[in-house]
Amino acid sequence: QVQLVESGGGLVQAGGSLRLSCAASGRTFNNYPMGWFRQAPGKEREFVAAINWNGGSTYYEDSVKGRFTISRDNPKNTVYLQMNSLKPEDTAVYYCAAGKTRFVVVTATQYVGFWGQGTQVTVSS
Image (tube, rainbow, N blue to C red; front, side):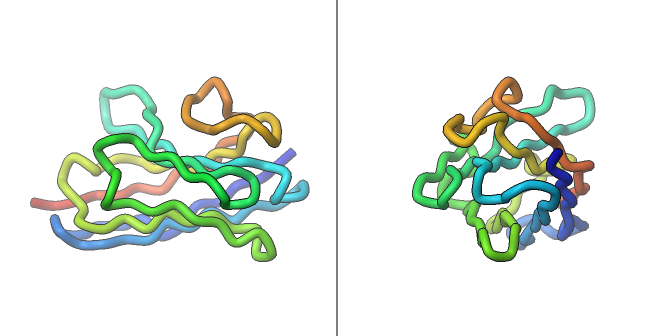
């Protein structure tokens, strides 16, 4: 099992920034590709960003490209999501996710083996 705990959410004005963190425990962190998803009220959970097991490759949903940056610190067992130029449409619960195996790319829920509990991000206009 892998336990994931997100932090860093909150309320921010449009144009502002937040950095989400996801601390992992349980199994060897660098065995897992990681991702961030979000879910707005009444909508399905959607992919936001992903990173492979060693941080060498990153992937982004089109609407966040150039604004969000995913990164990981394997010695600290932590993955981050730096969110800049936030928009009201970024408002959602953000979930950290670990891949089912080392070589999947966590760009869809079908590739997720473990979820965090989520952290709320609210962007006011």
